[in-house]
Structures are given as C-alpha cells and as structure tokens.
Length: 398
Image 1 (cartoon, rainbow, N blue to C red):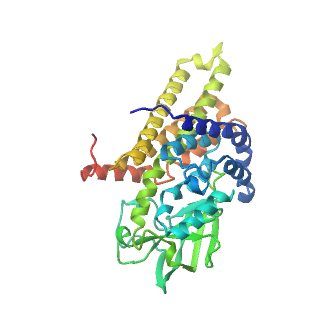
Image 2 (image 1 turned 180 degrees about the horizontal axis):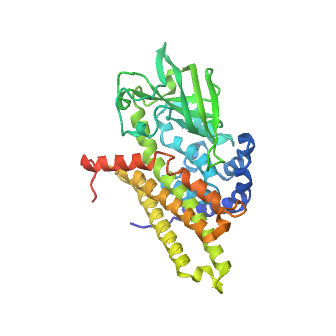
Image 3 (image 1 turned 180 degrees about the vertical axis):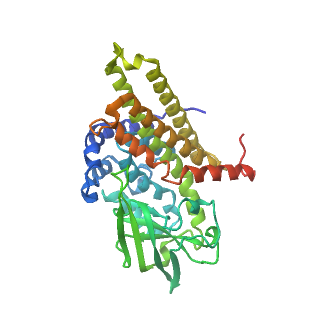
C-alpha cells in the first residue's frame, strides 16, 4: 500500500491549503461572530472556491469538474477545514451528490450537473433528519413506527411530498436537495424510504427556521418545509424504496470526507498550540520545553497522524475495494472527530487563560470541533452500529 500522493493530489492539496491560508483563515473568526446568518454566509469564498475548481472537485470533467476520487477530496477537505470547518462543510455537502447523481435519469442528471459545475454559488443538501428521527435513521432502529414522517404519495406520473426536515446542512442556501420521504408508511425505512431530487424553486417547498449552532457557524442549517410539493417522476433516484441504497453510497463516501474535515480543524488547533508553545515563556523557558506541555503536543500529533491514516485507508478502500468494509467510515469519523476535539481541548490548556478568550484562536476551534461529535451521525450511534456489524459477523477484524 503506497501512501505517496500523486502529483495531481499534491497540486490540489497545495491549492486548497493556499486558499485556506490566504482567503479563509483571515476572515473566518470575524465572520463566525456575526449574528445575522445571511451576513455570515461566506458566498464570496464559495465563489472563489468555484473559480479554483474546488467546489466542483469530484464531478466529471465533461461537466466542468475535476473527476477527483474520494481520497483526493479528503486531502482537499482537510486543508479547507484547517481554514474553517463550517466553510469546509459547505463544500463537502456539495461534493456528496457526486456519489449519487449518476443514478438519476440521464436528461435530468445532465441538466443539474451542468448547472452545478457552471454556477459559482450552486450548493447542495441532503435532507434526512427530522424532529422525531435523528441518528437512529442511519440503521440502528428500522421499524415502521420510526418517526420519520415526511411522506410521498403518487399523483399521476409524479409524486406529492408533505413533511418537515430540520438541522439540514446547507438547508437555507442550497440550489438542489436530495429529500428522503416514505412512500409506504407500513414498511421499514430499508424498504419504504425513497430519495427525490428537489430543486429549490419547486412550488410547495420553503425554508423554515435557520438554526444557530455553537460551531461550524459559516455553515448554515435549517428546517425544510414541504406542503403538497409536486416532484416529477424522473426526479426519483434509483427507484421507489431505494433510499437505503442511496444512503449507503452517501455514507461510504461521505464518512471519510467528514473525518478529513475533523483532521483539518484538529490540525489547525495543533499548529496554533505548537506555535504558541514556542513563543510563550514561563518559568524561564518556552512552555514547549515543560514536560506537561510537550506531552500534550505529542499526544495531539499522534492522534492526528493516526486519524489521517484512517481517513486515507478508508478513502482508498472506497475508491478501490469491492466489497468495501462499510464500518471503516464509521470508525474513521468517530476517531477523527474525537481526536479533533481533544486537540482543541488541549490547545485551550496550552494557551492557558488566553485559551478561552475570543482574541485567541482556540475557543473557536473547540466550538467547531465539538460539532462533529454529533454531526454526520452521533458517535454513540456509530459505535453501536459498528459493534452490531461485528456481532452479526457481517465484517471481520482481518
């Protein structure tokens, strides 16, 4: 197994890192504190990322993308998240549709892929979570009684959708949505949940409350409301009752990308803590020379190196292995998110009293890193799903 990056991957990594250092990081902290979400939304950065080809990175070249694989997206995503985690999530949510749009009717697929790659503010969103169904909809609990209540009913050759989603990343800003709705309330989600492609301007679709978060504040989450919203039949993805398969494709590719974002924010916290420990003098020497601080720095570095290795291993498996060990993504996301949080927590300690002050960078990293303990599936649920897979002999340690 060769961990050497290709020349193309190195070039994309450098481009993403330069963009994060020069464009994202200088404005992220100030944007983070803005109260009005519409002012906080970094459209200027989205447009600049589009001009570089970062927003459309995984999409086919014939539409205007770069055709990047999951590993390359993880490499770029780490760099963007080191600049700001929320901005990286805006982009990563848009990357996710690259893994499923090939399963839409060709005429519909071509239309949206051309628009996505052409329009510099085109973001996408995945709408699954509802007030009554959180991480349990990811397969831990699958029974007709589950409170995922958005439903779709046939009307002629199309469908009518009614329901409510919430906490949806890119919810108030996306141009195109994948909406999960139940087409048979008597069935479990595995058999009765269907995915629909929904344009923003569809009649009957509206944005509800925009949620405010502790971190990732340059990424917006909101409610989505569907009131007798009509969707044409050719906007069905894969077919009726196939959302489980869609979700499998999204999760296998999306989990390592989410984990890479975690590595990015954890790395940023480590780099700032390392620089501070070299400059801050206490007890007659830089605090980096005190064993307590040096030990924390070493733990941070070990965790990040291991997390990145897990991300690369998982991304490589998604790109190359069949069958794919589906627990790899869960494990990578759990580990990387907890490493990122520990890096930010230790960074606050290394900064001492300054660590909790807004003029220092650490309190923002801590807030940002805390979000992925819950975002993209809570770590508790992902642990339970991982254990269940081993208990049922669906995967092996070796």
